[in-house]
Image 1: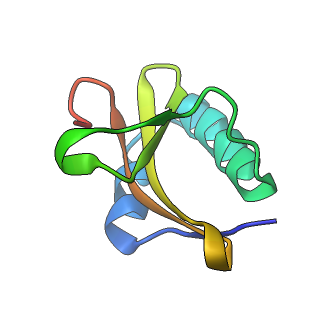
Image 2: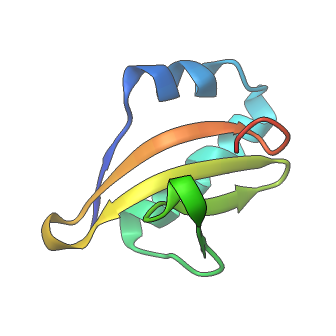
Length: 83
């Protein structure tokens, strides 16, 4: 079981998303909490070390710290503006 940290700025981004997509995003966050990382991709370049989880047209960018089982959500945004 992982601990999920959601910074205030990330939570505000999530609040701006419509309720249907919010539900999908929350379910994917629950998957992260349970340690389900299937089909997540590692980012490259300036975002090296971060991961991305696809949720429809939205992306969850997160940082996984294996030693202490903490996942910090970096950004939740539409795929056109997330990178």
